[in-house]
Length: 610
Image (tube, rainbow, N blue to C red; front, side):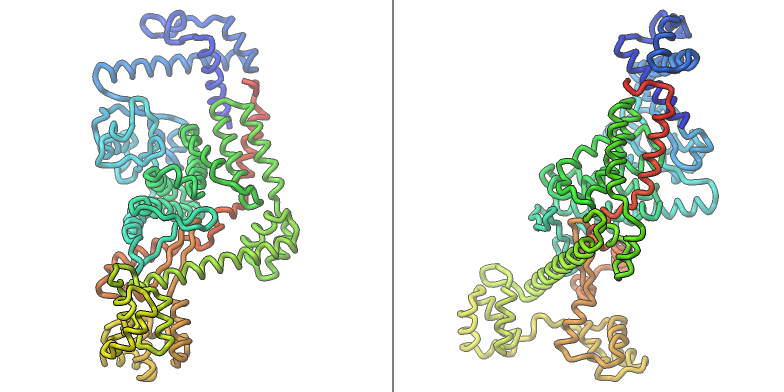
């Protein structure tokens, strides 16, 4: 708290000096040798009265600002004459606390060196292994193989260095985090590159009303990457792994920047990402980055619309972060107003613990109960009705998405008509329902360009089509060895073969299905329906949904490598399937930060009107 008060005093002193056009690096404040000159007593007394601080505090503050100005002047001259830039680096985390958390350390270098070269310089400065550092500047992770000037880094830029602890246990943990970041991006790239390949994954990007957005492939790929990295980062943030979450958020921000503003205003993910990034800077106590990071929060007003109880939780965090940014800019009046707004919303969203427990006893989750009570201002009957309605809506959306995905996949397997259009799946099902063989029905529709009347005529006049194979069935041969392996577990031969055929030779899934039904699979129609639902996992992110069916990954023509499968499974395994997960804030941490900053302002011996 003392450091924050000190920073604010210096900020307000600087503002007064700028308003009066006082230059501390010039006489009489600094002599020809750039040493301390004379500071008028009248100036010290006047600032002490205006800022309600002691004369000693003002005098020391003015000297600190004078030394900073001289230092910057020397750095500017060195850059202009020699091309050597001075960057200010700050460590974050427990090690930084040991080495003075608030201290910015100067690092000199040319701006044509690479990010890897800078990391080596910083690691030498702090006697750390280069692999233990990840550097961030201007809201971007510094790329290793690109020059600094091409990444927008200039003389005097602030650099945030995320470090790895020196203890063996922490070292292993941090190395795992760095590997996780690289692995996540690699897996996200695989996923986004397959975004238009219906057979493995279907990436649904929709606006805030659930309407699908028809996007160019490159833009859809960028959005997929951005949203995937964002959600993976949120999973890390929930586990308090802020040093893992922030790089993922910044990677996501870089991908979002490839999209049009019109698109970013259609989905709320980008606004939420801006909040998450600023929150990470706050938690990491990297306050130098807060003003720049706060610029991104302006997009929230143009994106969030409703103002329901659930969205108000996001606004509470927004007001808090905006207030903190204003505080560190020295705008105390605005900061106080924003903190009052945050406090008002916080009190509005307070959830009675007894009501929460009462709804949870009805079988609802804590998240559902909290969101319901907030949305309906603590009214239990209305909250329950709200929860039930939301669950119904989500089920309908998921069901519709799965159905549409199945239809597209089936249409792709049925082939294209003579005119180049996918075979109409509904017409195909109609013909099969009329007892025409599926292979013949598909071929007739292809020849008839999806004209069902003409297709029926073709089927009645071309009996040779009746013996065509089913286009939806796999050509996988079920061998005796496969059947024997399943039977060794005690299953009937016929049931083993049936399950293997159902899962196209996948022994593990065949056994799992047999175990599910105690060795006796239900009738084909029932089984098919059940398997279709159970084998398909639908991961609904905020306005982004992944739908995958593992059976398609067994298709030799479309098969992913083992490593790719493992990484994709890892990628989606800890992503929350709840579309409203980002709204479920307990607000306990927000309350702590609000009280901290309110207390700092109350205890400051300086004017809040500056």
